[in-house]
Amino acid sequence: MFRLSFLASLIRRLILLPLTFAVLPAQAEITLGAEDAEAQVRVGCLFPLSGRGGLYGRDSAVGIQLALEWLQQQPIQYPHLQIFIADSRSKASRTTRLAREFVRDRGTRFICGVVNSAVAWQVAQVAESERAFFIGTDHASPRLTETDVSPYYFRVNNNSRQSMYAAARYIQDSFQRPGKRPLRISYLGPDYDYGYQMWQDLQQALRQADVPFEIVTALWPRLYEPDYTPYIEALKQQPTDLIINSLWGGDLVAFIEQANQANLFRHAEFANFDTGGNYEVLAALADDMPSGLILSSRHHNNWPQTDYNRWFVQRFHALSGRYPSYAAEGAYAGILAIAEAIRIAGVDADDTEIRTTLEGLRLKLPEDPPGFTSYMDPVTHQLQQVIAIGRSLPASDHPPASKLLGEWKIYPPHPSSRAKTARAADHE
Picture 1: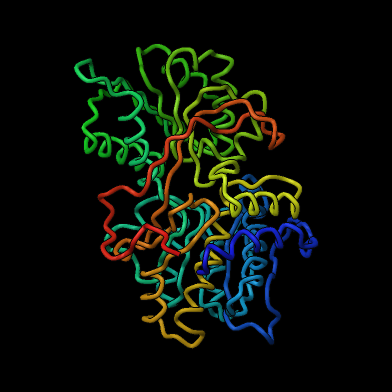
Picture 2: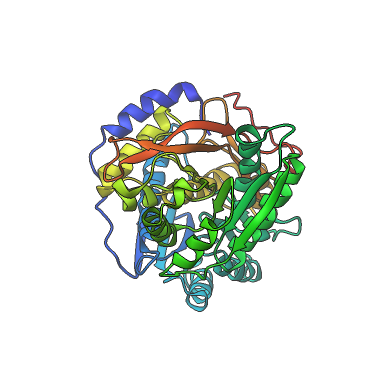
């Protein structure tokens, strides 16, 4: 996008900018960016702004504000974006209706967002039928990025399959003991597609990594389960080396709180490789987050320690009064991806030109460590990113969280990635 020699001085200027955006209230729709008369590209974003998932939507809206601010400060000209953010309420019928209305009534050429993978699947079908590009920023099911991916769908956050391949490599590095018995694994995941796909992908990745393992048990609590006691007791009754959990958000918070009371974490090592290290979870648990859990997330506030990531986290906090969940950086990436694609292809580019540009996209993001730039796999339309896995350790610099991740192990995109032409190295 720009030369890295420009980055440090730009970040210093951005940190010192006055607060040009107000904290966003909870409301049915938010409009950001260019006015009607100046807008060159219109984008319709769909996030929950209220209810159980409202934090993800509110964080995403601030992430979009940051993206617009960043683009305005670049030394090159980006198109004027007008962005509509509507409250999906995490309901499929409402979200698909809003997607159609964005395209037909507002003239949006791009749809972005969607937290729930099942809802995203339906939105992807609507977007393709309406010939609008859908930039996924928060959902994680790999079903949407298989080889028969929609020509109008692209995802800019890592999917759960990428997380599980990194998990297998972490397990290989940390648990495999040559000549000894297979690793005993217990699994607990939500009783819907996300949880099942995660478990399937993890087993496949462990086999590909030649990690000997045996399955002790697999448990499937319903989404939004209030009482995990029976599941926790079932886990404690079996001799296990590693408990792998794929709950997320409030469900994971409730599980850890109840597991603390039952002393589950003394029974076996515990890992959540996709969303467990999300700041939302760390902040909600505060002192109740145990030390030593193996966790990861799609963005970390304290990794990588780069000027770019520090600017993103500090500026988010200045605008909102809180630290970002991973949803914020996903939405930020989505807006940057749209702006970069239109800058390269042109405001008047046809669908084929935009698709080709997105398939060759390289995007420097706050989560990228030095020497790496996120890049799009042209076959699966899935952005390829580095995944960092760590352990929960005491930390006091991002309250209300009292634990952050450390003791990092870093995993670049898996070598079996289907990308043929993109390059991961950042030569800028």
